[in-house]
Length: 289
Image (cartoon, rainbow, N blue to C red; front, top):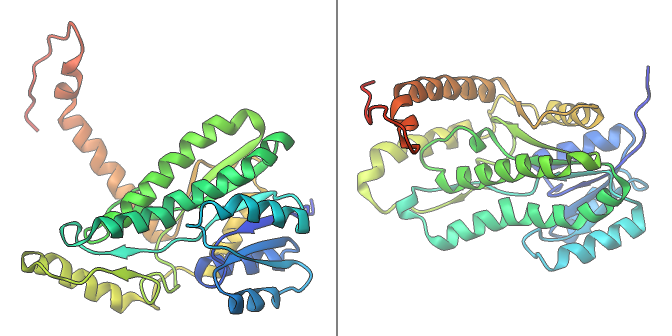
């Protein structure tokens, strides 16, 4: 049996939810964890988890200019970063027409631009060492979609695409990138952590009111166990050939499989029109489903 080598993790958003579970799992496995928090009280609580291996870093991941300095200082104090886990982020619930551009900008700042800034901060060192792991926590909502969280899905779709493309850029350097896409886990994501746009347009009541009520009812009763997600993360880090994306949870896998099947049917139905746009193509421009 091979004993895993102790690593230094940098995990964003460790004060609660999956981020806290990921950090606790890594610490329990004997690793060192630099964990970002936004408040001094959260920093104290995190440091108390393992005084010699839990290293809080007070940092808002939307403060892009502060990230490179903070990461450099953390590496100088704790050691080189072997694994970056971009976990910090939040959900925005709201009909697109009712939600503001400011809502969209805040969502992308936390869920896309912050993770990209973190990656840019650790990549020079990982590239020089020719090794490293980057795990971007996305969501099943980064592949499937649901009404009422269009901004959130858009941000997670963006991070999925960035992760996949980045993985191809870094493959020859020995750096592996995985999008970790959870389904519903028992965290505060759908509760106090979610940003909700007030309802204003009655035409959306029939769509949105049941969704909002169901999400409130499910909060605290989700099927996913954060501690088991942490174990999956550790297995992913130890894998010699990690996947491009890893879905977590029966719900995530079931919904993704349903979407893949629907996509396959739709692609077939519109195959002729899709292939009709090349120079010299004489295929018919339409095809009935």
